[in-house]
Length: 312
Image 1 (tube, rainbow, N blue to C red):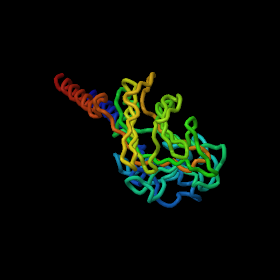
Image 2: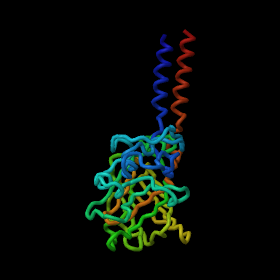
Image 3: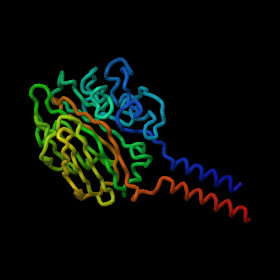
């Protein structure tokens, strides 16, 4: 009887350790959990990622399968912080899986866009996404606080908005932000000016020009977050021209980064687009317990308890 109770307790622990992978970014295809078909609801806005279970279905990277379904707004892994869906417009200012053929390596992308029409002057857009174990190959984000995490994604912003709008270095038109669990920005990359110049900043500090421009295509961004030593590295590959620019190497943040909690996208009111594709995170397992270690430890405990019982 004691053994049965012990096995039940250990089994419960194993189920808790085997965290179910739910959310995912990936390439924003249907297998990644992003709706690629017609609107789910009564208007185009129903495709907005905050209105359905975006990233929570599909089989890619250990996903659970299933399909898209409408949910109460902002109850999934995506939420709107400002603008966007809150403006209640049928087609403008939404973050959606943008249909073919604009993707980087596959047909679809995640598109934050105004459609370059009917600008809402003074109303910027910001959306936030919660990282999950599916993004980190089965590792729960909070378990990575002493790890090295590599990030790679492809980005295509545009600052050529309506009315001749042109953003500035101190106020970029489109940004991507990597945040900790509390929503503090570790690292931000932005695009500004008619030439779509690239800038970055750490911990919400001063924007710094990277000294080059977007190539006008999907350019590759590589980041390395050393969460043990609180440093970040950053390089930017210009697709047109095939030029790799190393911008930061183990730059100290001067604060405890804890772990990667969120990704955020922002866009100025008069900007035209902020496209993201092929997001990939890789964890340096040297600083992360193997997912099976705890399971093996508990399995050994079960065996030891069983032997102890038989020896009585």
